[in-house]
Length: 383
Image (tube, rainbow, N blue to C red; front, side):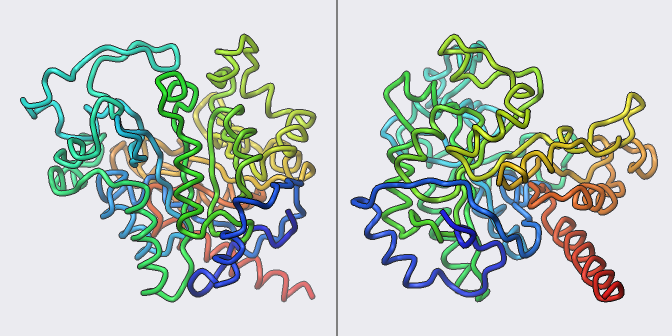
């Protein structure tokens, strides 16, 4: 892959060259090389859509995010019983749908072990797509976001194809290219139940002309094995997510190689990640950790280390409410109120981020644009 492998500030619809390139993807061998990235401006990735304003992973949340100026929208992907990929943060859906109030599905409530954790509830892999489509989305954190809860019961669970269709329609309508940033959720678990996520994902991207190296797509995962597999299947940029430092990717747990995410974040391991991925998605404390009093600390070397390995850095998750902000960026004492979100975003952009995942994409876009304008003004003044 070359420096043109990703277009971070595209205008217009997907070009015909991309569609022609994707049509050849079935037969052309995938050759992956860490590129020298050219970043026009940091990306704003709408985390589960505009999830600060609408129930997450709904077409309404994605549509609003696009209206707010997001560059990419992020659907987390899980599978139905009949193999369709749908957008949910987890395959256990009692917290994000009205399934618990549906007596017709009471018998599907069960206990499962997902990535080593016992969970009781309702799981997407026990529902056909037709059954899942009868459910309606609800707000995951209603006490924190009561405005979102006002939309409970209005929206379906969308398929990946429906998300792609929406993004393509909005790209034409707005005359700018909006990208998709899907995450494969629990790939080791879904492999174990015969519902592999990678093959249907690749088929869907190819069918939509989104499999080539210039396609406005990133694919991300917290696991490593499936990204290595995808690197041999598809040419779109891949992103290795990094969870909490002491957590372990579940595929490595299952393989008896329990290396923590912090161990994967060293310069040597980042260089190894660059052999199969094009970027890293760190939890934001890898970039700017919190001090013991909860205030924002000094930058680490993580961004520089990742850039030295030719990896993009897209950090997560930026949320506007005080409860999520460093103590020195909170405004007032109400933890549900919005604090100095622009200040926090700016601090991270100053560290060299190439993109960020945001629940409130309008605020993130405004902060990003102000940062870019100030940077360009400073460069002009210095020249």
